[in-house]
Image (cartoon, rainbow, N blue to C red; front, side, top):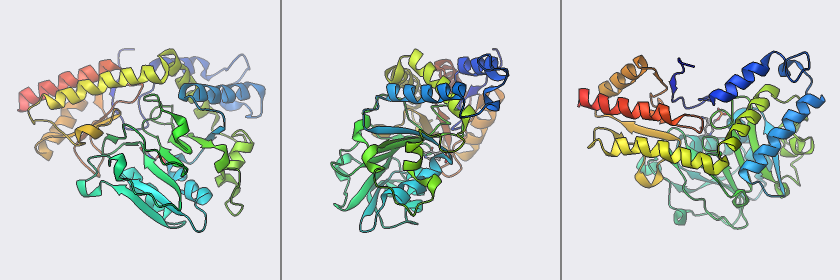
Length: 362
Ligand code: PMP
């Protein structure tokens, strides 16, 4: 396919071409059923197979141990910002958050609606250019959980290892880096992620939660916002986003065929090294936003000397087939999101463009 853009969108983002083509083939008629998957009941055998297969693949690829539930819910990761404290923050306990950037801050703001929050560590004073050292975390003994944002999509920072929070459950927002590398799920009480970066299209959110955390639900929480509702019904309590779950399943098959989480990490490191290498070789022409030790494998954020040059960079890049390189309005500058499905060829093309741009505008 000749006219695929070099897609560096932050989310929704690039999907594997093979997955799009397979979905296209199956779009009008699915599995000899005389109809599209989108036209059939979520209670029928054909959809159920798709549903349970996606769940099984997610468990396999992430290495989810026994004792955890994998859920498909709606409302995006933003709804999880509320569901977490609604379900887990009980009277007499506090919600501890690590303030690493824009998304962590949104999670904290939402938790404040439900109870007492504490900031266990923060990089705000450094404009969120780094992830606090694990040793800096100060978690009160009466914390109901500790929440961290594994990858700050806007600032372009990422945790390289996760803290051991002992008996206090660790909750991770992995929206922008799930399956970008192997993780040890048992370090977490709960993981959640909107699908629209590494797992598929928007419309479905993944929750992986330890069963003991849903054993005693808070009965004043609305039914649809309780984890136990979805856990008991295998995410079929109400109508799930069937097409988004089907697409996520196809993306997971692609991840598996490409080496699983370890294969993704190798691929992602190659791409990230190319871009950070270009930044570091530019003698200060390109300035990485994140500090080196906190650089994200998924969102490469950088600045140029002036906003005029940044605007020119975006304009020229668009003319050459690059999409999505303008940084988020809250931090400015430039951002290349290089999620799992972004091919290394796109990154090589961007590297060439960056070197050429510097030569012409240096
Ligand atoms: N957390 C992170 C780290 C994100 O990147 C995003 C979306 N960009 C969200 C939460 C919010 O996700 P949603 O739009 O699915 O609510």
